[in-house]
Length: 62
Image (tube, rainbow, N blue to C red; front, side, top):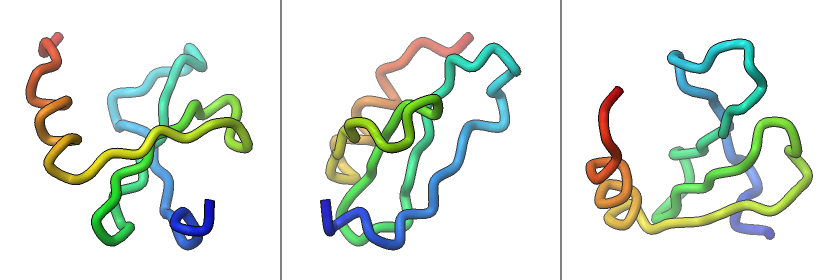
């Protein structure tokens, strides 16, 4: 997807060494992208910034 060119991917600082992590790119205009850190060439989920805020604020905090 061309809209992902220039994406700066990062994992949460809370990620451990279990390998079950996602990476997020928030530096793209009008787009937040999420991918599996073990399959960086695999599928990517995309959200608008508003959708991402709605999603992340609905997550339970552990």
